[in-house]
Length: 395
Image (cartoon, rainbow, N blue to C red):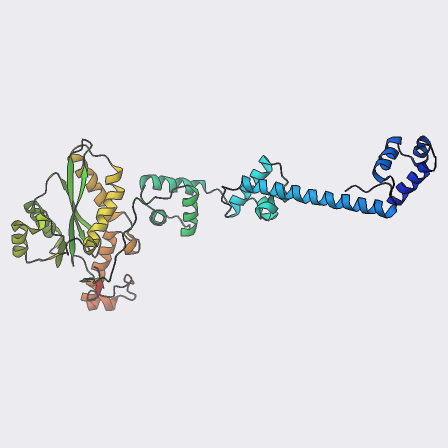
């Protein structure tokens, strides 16, 4: 508050002179004030002594302070209402909140920072980090090519191209570019204890079969027979057709066995294509153990169900098919990419083909002790795999 020019004692003395008969004009000229000021003093302090005048001025000062505090609180409340639906988590959000208060309510930076609870140094900070325009552009291109890939797989693809950035930096750019992939459905949680089937850690130890369905642009439905190696996660076959019988399944399996070798076990559900006489005769002639999962328990066939989910998410939901030749070509390309290019999270982000080659090379070295002794340093085996006799829980 502005300091008064005249004290209470001086004002009361002037008023006493006026009461004693001095003219207002003479008092104004004598004390260097206007006549209006003397009349105002008389209206305010007339009939008071010095102590009463001091008490009145103290009350006015206190009242002014209270009014100022009330106005500040009301201003703070109005500012908080402006920020009611704004998330103020992190420096960037607080900078935006301070800028909003300064623009909308004309608050000072100090006042806005006190309302938001931010340090002024943090508000004034400007990042000196390089813009990373080239890396951001390449990340966006990869995300557009692989629209259902998350930041971990995109990081693996960038590493293959020679990008030295760490995964935390890639994740930050991934978030800033708004490339987050939304999950289409909640993951089902298993209930109870699992009893895994032990499978030898080598290719062709166990295969899994299942069907996945889709439709053409005209509404006609077709199905795809998926065959996967449970250990290497390779997609051994993805056969689309409008109708696939048990005899067709037997022919496709025969072709894969001739190309790849006989599996130790095949797992499937109780579909009529797998339980028909043609399949039973094929199993008997090929001497292959066929295991059927429990009815209503698709989680027991989890490897091929996972392949079905990836195919559904990355290909079927993203592609429009017009005739039977269209899905045959596109699914064949997707399977080649899945086996040779796509990093698999359960294989330490190796491709299925690279992981299968690693298992085969490890098995060859262990079966040939002379070659093992000639090797000065043997390459490390994948986590949980020590030799070809190791049993891993692959169920």
